[in-house]
Image (cartoon, rainbow, N blue to C red):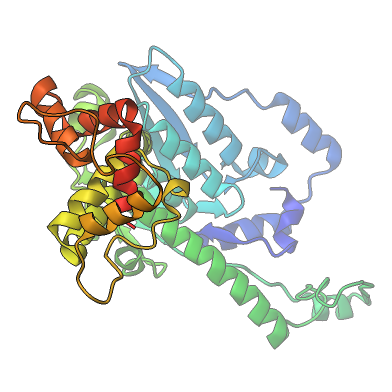
Length: 430
């Protein structure tokens, strides 16, 4: 953010009182370009964090802006780009066991805040992150602080101010007194809508309000995700109010009241993390995204793609047994076990006999075979010990007993060794 951003309809998530103070600073600013360049060059470099007792402390103070700027040098503040770089660096530092965001900020611009919250959400899966409210953790500052594993506040800290604002300045009277008339030449109906050279119109107000409402929803949804709760719960406290320490804890905005030194000296983050009850898939995804991803991957791998096929066959066989009876069901099952294809069964009109009057199927099949001139039709060449000829099914039963094998294997053996018997059996089904 630069100084000129104040006149560009910038959307802020910041305490209104602090916003007015920044406005006043902007109006009285009169440093020339040379002074600004000197300030930029002489400003001491800022460390991303310092480490104490295995804890990386990232200082987040003043108004928050997307990037470092002359405004930051003049009036203090922290950029989102700085916070993101510090959190990522601490996450990859082997000497760091936990990260503390030491926050004393009234908030700042909306631009860049959700991206910063996203970085914090990702890093908290690797190392515990604690947001400590050492003074103010308001608006945009609360937005990013809520992305930590837990929030600790001092008893007198100012927490909350969940909301967004925009300020429109009307300089039309000032321009008139100065003898200045500005004319905007644009292409596009809304290109210069809400400019500061004229009073704010109702149409411009509606457009700005729609934009603010959209940003506000993103703010609330992000905090709900960060805190592992639902949007309705956050909306109860998302009316712009500021809550003092203990009040904020009662409202669920912070996890505990404490002090900075104890966070560093009383052990490391994971051991001190409060137990959180997982109450929704959204909360589980927010708290443990890597775990959810692994569960999803394993679920896909564990699916037995053959099971649906087996279940379908069993269902079809069951329907055949019920609808056509035990005898036809056995025949249909035998057909499946032989591996016969649909093309081979095209000549079979139906499993259930179509004759109007009951007939002896064996006699019908025998009659058909006689017409073909077949010798000893309907019987196998193989004869039992008592010289009783065997049909296809009898041959299958005999092989099952003799070989001690399953029906399916016996069917295949008879089909291979006595194909003519199998052909007779198929014809008998027509």
